[in-house]
Amino acid sequence: MCNACVIENVKQSMMSRRQLFSGAAATGAAAIAAGALAARPALAQASGKVVDLTHVLDENFPTFDGVPGIAYEEAVNFDSSGYQLWKLTIFEHSGTHIDAPLHFSKDGTSVAELAPETLICPLCVIDISAKAAEDANAMVEAADVEAWIAAHGEIPEGACVAMHSGWAAKVGTPEFRNTPDGSFAFPGFGKSATDLLAGMNVAAIGVDSLSLDPGNSADFAVHNSWLPGGRYGIENLANLDQMPATGATLFVGAPKHARGTGGPARILAVI
Image 1 (cartoon, rainbow, N blue to C red):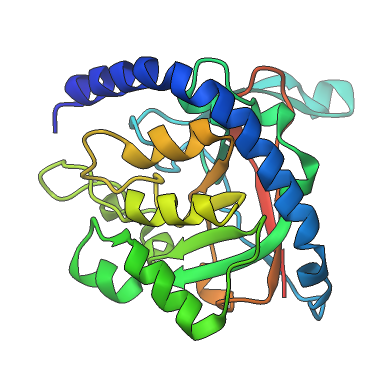
Image 2: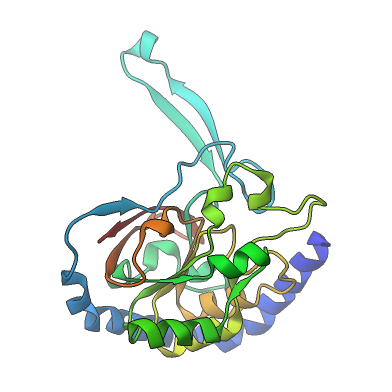
């Protein structure tokens, strides 16, 4: 894959979409927040078991560009000062993290500006692990969403819809990111699915892989359509194999730094 070509395509797509989505983002965010409030009754059905959907972030956690996502520098030493403190250098899109609308739009919503109502939401898990076992670049498609609805009922407005591909089990191995020849290869969402979910006022999508788009994507179609619409994404989720298809409530511990395009997050689910 030509990374430079991909990056240039993304830049051009972002510029051409900026005017289109500037109004849509505000409208989308308002609709999502309203949907989240409407979905409140769905949040009261949990028994109280908490499952951490967050990977531990360290220097070895895989990143899209292969550069370590976090670096530590000792700022205060315990032996000399009686307490200890690290200075951290962190790339926003590292570990289990949020993609805010600003990540793929010039003037979209930052991670600090995400509506709080969208950060506590019903969780719907679509299992494509069988497809992913056959195809490393498998996608959640519209047909998968429709099959989920047929089996489990309507997806609530304001929900987070997460892809369980089984990819989290590959963290710590080269296969989480690449094929043996170095090509990106991991599952993600297809635009047919996210377009359908956008029409349902879903607040967020999540993946247990490195990116919302599959590894072989050349145009980041999901990033370029989902995020500028005022919605957010979560990448590198853990423990989705412990989640029911429906019935859990997601708590998204989004960072709140100004101008943030995203950032590492603590994601918890209550079943």
